[in-house]
Image (cartoon, rainbow, N blue to C red; front, side, top):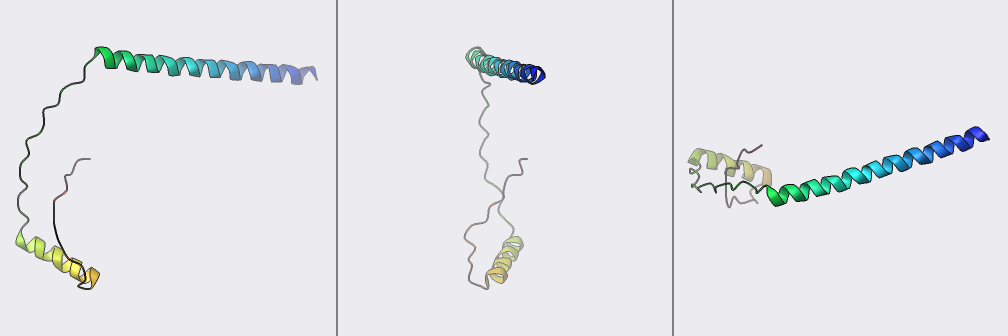
Length: 88
């Protein structure tokens, strides 16, 4: 019975220690974030110049329209076609 009490005591001490260390880490992290945000300004990123995308070639637009007609059984309508940016 004495071994069980020792085991439970060690478990409680260990869990309390872990909990206390986690609290210390959380609050120090929050403090560090506040200090960095206060004293280190964020870099100003210049806005990109908006350029008009090149027009979509007629044969590509015709292929897209034909594909939409086949898939939707001529019930679909192509309203707008835009090129997506390839930012990964």
